[in-house]
Length: 209
Ligand SMILES: Nc1ncnc2c1ncn2[C@@H]1O[C@H](COP(=O)(O)OP(=O)(O)OP(=O)(O)O)[C@@H](O)[C@H]1O
Ligand SMILES: [Mg+2]
Image 1 (cartoon, helix red, strand yellow):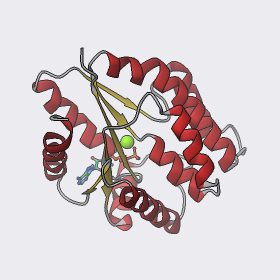
Image 2: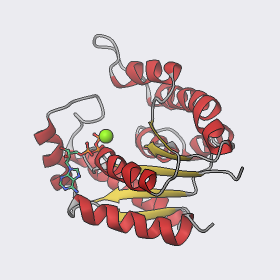
Image 3: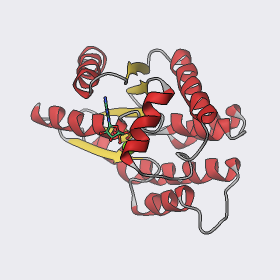
C-alpha cells in the first residue's frame, strides 16, 4: 500500500477553510479516494479536550502564548500519532483544517520564539509532513465581515484588526519561505473558484508525486 497524501488548509478566521474542505472532500471521494478530514487543534478525543481548554479558557483566565504553544503541540502529537500517521500509512488522503503553520503564526505573534516553535514542530510532525499546504489569503476586512455574518466567537476571533493583519502577513511569510510546500490561494473569490484552484494544484503537484 502506498502512503496517502497529507493536505493542510491554513489561513485566518473566516477565510473559508471549512467551506473549502467540505467541497474538496466530496470531489476527492468522487474520484474513489479514501479521504479523512480532520481539524486542529483537535481531531482525537484528547486533542479535542485541549482545543476546548485553549479556545475557551474557563472564567476570566488566560493562557500565556508559550503555554498555548505547548498545548497546541501536545494536541498535535496525539493527533499525529493516533489519527494522521495511521491514516497516511493506510493509503488515505488526510485533509486537515489548520496545522502546524497556525501555531507558528498565532503563538509567534503572541511572542513565542520562532526557532523554538519550529523545533517543537519538527519533532511533533516528523511522521506527518504535509505534501501541500493551501494558505487561504484575502483582505482582512472582507474576511472579518464573513466572520461577523457567521456570528461565532472565540478568543482568537475577538482580537483587533491589527492582529488579523499580522496573521495574514505571517502566513504569507511562511508561504514565501516554503514555496515547494505552500500555495497561497486568493480566498476573496467565489468558493467554486477557490476549489478549482486548489484542485488544479493537487492534480499538478500532489496526485502525481
Ligand atoms: N469564498 C467565499 N466567499 C464568500 N463567503 C465565503 C467563502 N468561503 C466561505 N464563506 C463564508 O464565510 C464564512 C466563513 O467560512 P468558513 O467557516 O469556511 O471559514 P473558516 O476559514 O473555516 O473560519 P474559521 O477559521 O473561523 O473556522 C461562512 O459563513 C462561509 O459560508
Ligand atoms: Mg473553520
